[in-house]
Length: 455
Image (cartoon, rainbow, N blue to C red; front, side, top):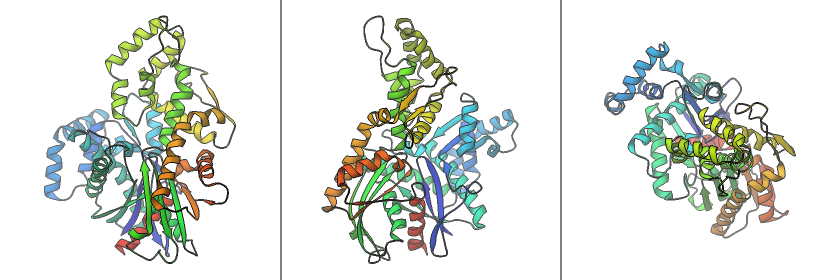
């Protein structure tokens, strides 16, 4: 059976064709989306879970050899935690978030691994790690989808951004796509195709067009923003080769996660000492605070939890004129609550899309700590990111050499009125803006394309 698989930065979803239309598959009761998060009691459990899926003798032996140390640790970990299977010690989606918040120091938590797949300079050990994490998360979705469909899924179209990273794009894209392909094969996908996510979102929309249009698809996801100018409509929809219909493509690693991080850095970090004056008259070093919130940057997280940062914070605690604020930051670091802070920033970002003020409950750092932010302040904090998105839209339009008949906005982060205003500022009021299924359009479009390539 074939499906479309949106392995997203923020959420994962899968679709299939039912009675001629793409339909999202319920994964958790009636919910078709699972947050892209994983929590394991032991890192090694992830490798053993993947190993159990391998059936080919040569592949299984090669994998066991490359992960020998981890598989040995997994056996010891099962005894330590009194588990019969590593499945009992791995959690996904909302369950993963709940376990992490309850015990941030006890297990291994990863959020939005897709953000890391194109990172420059990854060693083979890191590539192996991301292959395992992606495979485990894909397996969770695949198993739940197969349970719902009562069929085995072997063919899949997986969505990918135009560019996984802003620098060394070609090398980055090859690395990231190779990780996704290797992970998919290990869990039983025998035929894997890839499709740009903004095009997938557009294909879902195209099924509802009754006349030909030049459509600018603006897909603002959790990790990337992609823009595509595409010729769509009845004249184009049945063609398998759509190369001549794609007039322009741009994409960069700027998405919803970046808005969360920016909000956390600029609005929340001052409440834990980021801008506090020092007795020396020098400014407070910003890097520890920036690194703390950069949860999508491996290097930043490594540096934040490095011993040198701990020693720096001890010195700054003696030099700051506001020691009570820096104590909050030190407590956050010791409790490994930086992911939780960014999570509250994400929830606040969502709230500020529809309300003028929001309080951020940070009582896991200090009792009654609840900084407040206005929608205006949030917009100001996001200005640089919005400018990047505007530049991507302008570039896609320039590549196409024409203005769109309409703009189709999709992606979870595109629900923000700030994104809509960017489009209005660029094209004025005369061009129609159509909102897609912000979370489901990519998955649905991937299902549409899967039918065309596999049926």
